[in-house]
Structure formats: structure tokens, C-alpha cells
Length: 161
Image 1 (cartoon, helix red, strand yellow):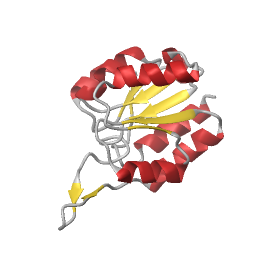
Image 2 (cartoon, one colour):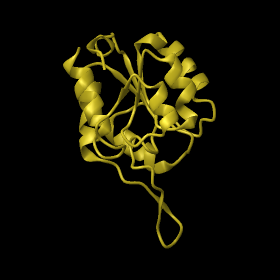
Image 3 (tube, helix red, strand yellow):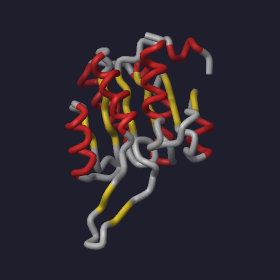
């Protein structure tokens, strides 16, 4: 990817959850409780980006307390879950934060993310993202979702600030 895209004044990093912050699997305990696996290196990257003054948001189609707990632990304040129209949700959030979509980096991996990937300044997908997402993305990570992809993105954002 051209370095110019990373050099944009990215003010907001918006992330899908399943397949981006997780490996895309849904784990169920024997009592039916849902579990998700998060990568600690991704979490450290998110904290570093927040510390550098870049806002972070989660925009997920699913809604779980697990995601809320993990994001609270990382200090992420913008947690949007149960979202059917991710582009509308991002537009509303960006407007509220007075951030142009050109200053947004969005990471998505599947069909629900395509409209957002088409509209943001920096569209990113993960190595194991679906082909449709890869076709829309400016950048595809070398790491799989849930296995350090978000850390890779955070490091690139910070390196080009």
C-alpha cells in the first residue's frame, strides 16, 4: 500500500469485532454461554493508539457483554453493538465527533462492512477477510483477524503520524 494513505490525518480508528478483533469463531460453553478470544497484543495496540490521541470505536453487528467488558478494559468509549447499518452508525458517530470520513480508518472483514470500506479514508481488511472486503480495502494485513492484525494496523498508524 502506498505510504500516502497511512499519512492521512487519521483521527478515528473504527473496528468490526468478529473476524477482526477475534478469529471469527463463536465459542459456546456447555451451558450455552458465548465466549470470545481476544489477542492481548491487539489490545496493547489499541491502548497505544488511544494514548496517541486517535479515537477508537467498535461497530459490531452482534451485541455481547463480552465485547463491552473487553473494550471498557482497554478504555474504548465508543462501543456500538447490535448495528445493522454500520455506515449510518459511523456517519452519526463521526458527525458527533466532528470527524470527516476521510479521517477515518475502518477495519472490516465481511459483507456487512463493504459500504463502510467504500466510504472511509483508509479501508482495511485482515488477511483472512472475505474476498469482497479485500477488493474494497486499501490495505490487507499480514496477520489474521484475532491474531495480531489490529496491532499491525495500530503500529502502522503510529509509525506514519
